Image 1 (cartoon, rainbow, N blue to C red):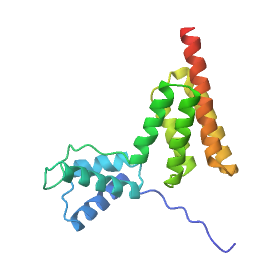
Image 2 (spheres, one colour):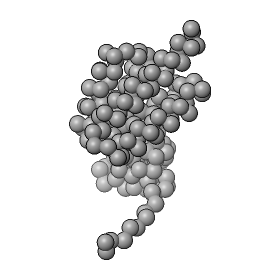
Image 3 (cartoon, rainbow, N blue to C red):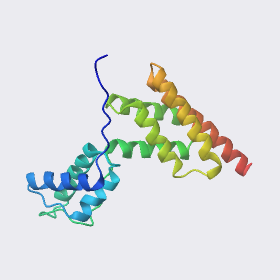
Image 4 (cartoon, rainbow, N blue to C red):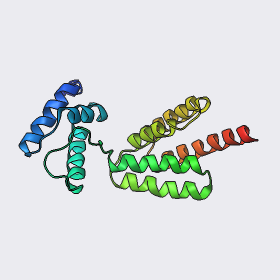
Length: 182
């Protein structure tokens, strides 16, 4: 009860670029300004994530055999778990069946086992689903994502609520497709 909460704002894009340049120089990597800006924007003002993205860019550049410093037009790599959630979104949009739901449940378990928080999973999944949805469905899907995110915060078994959100999305999407094509 003697603790005092202190609000610390997220670092600005310029501050992130400065940190990336500092990390790069301490690791003897030349980080082009354009790449640092791109990473800062992609990181969502999350410094830890920006440094991990810089590391991923370096590994990608090193493995390509280009050698030397990073290039300014290099592609910024998403994290593995984000790519995994993107694949889940594509899968459940492509097919709505009990088999797909069970396969998705296993993938969600894998994300949870790898310490990705359930609230981050549901937010990222909802964002990925929004990319390919019709405008008529977006509000309903966001409402259900918020509903199940609240359930995750108050409940005990995260997998139940994540799976329920996926099942609800599949039902909504299947209904929409059936109404569209009759």
